[in-house]
Length: 460
Image 1 (tube, rainbow, N blue to C red):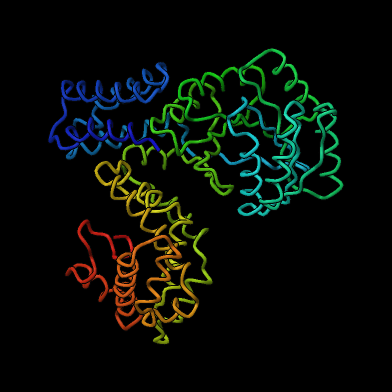
Image 2: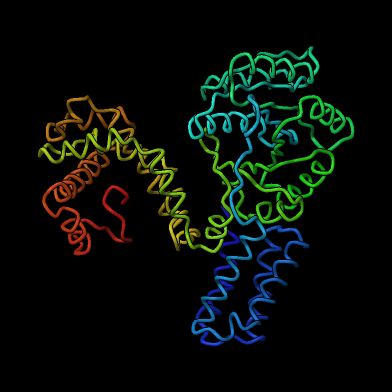
């Protein structure tokens, strides 16, 4: 996310952050670069103009020119102004009403509205502990109703049946009655999308809105459409009293124009962003964290939250106890570590949130190769018997041949995996002993387990 914008902004700010003193001239040159970077990222022109004016006004004032480290202060100003453009803080859904809290989802066809309904349902169930019902009022696309039913089952939400011969308002009102009788906290209403903004579509959704009076009206928009996303949101905002925006496909948006334009053009907060196809790939939108990602300052808070949510604590505790009792770190444990990392968005997803790693640049090929190796490792371990996973020393030549055939790999791939496992085993032994973490860090620092490029053995 934001790769090209991060690259351009990092380059533009690198020179000025090292300056002992800032002048109007060197600020002017940097701001020109920043302006070009934002325009190339498809940020709307009025947004760019306001942003540059704000940064310039603060930068040539006493705030920067009289400080001991003006370059760093300039970076801080850019960060704060980026944050201000996107909204100063995350705005949560307002669900404080007599249950059920009705949330209406609007947007164009192909924006990922139905999938987002399921993602939001999962978010509310798992993180907000709400009882959620979903209903589809999309009577023009029969497959949409079936799609939502399938997704609702997957995320654990209750699906309210509807059919294409009903009126959207009738469907929504019936669902509200069902949700009220069933004691549901939230009702998510999926609506029909169109290929473009048209009068008939707007009239229908206005009628639906007036009939059900939702507490939240969220506009779902594809982040990859850039400036168009902000303009479409503006058109919807003029027809409907929107309360917020959800940016979908933000993980595929290398430019970031939509994230930086939507708030200022519509005046409505971005409440969530979709970061992948999986039903748990929906993140609350934190402007300060996104601003940090754009400037390649990392997003460690989100990484920690993901770790707390996605890492299987029972497995981690079990492994810790196992290591303390002196039992070895076997290939089943090794497989668990690989899968836990995949749950965190893989190596790329994790590196993207670390400071200085937002733009992987030359590391991109290495990272892709490492991800490929993880998949190969999984295939190899899945091709082993349970006994072989627990006692890798039993794997002789004939067993290696069978495992290679079963996983579509070569015997040298099996040997490489077993060697990497041995290195991890040694490292785990160091961690489990007295003063384990210090011993492990010493081993890594002295080259005991760190390959070229500074990654631990399992990431080699």
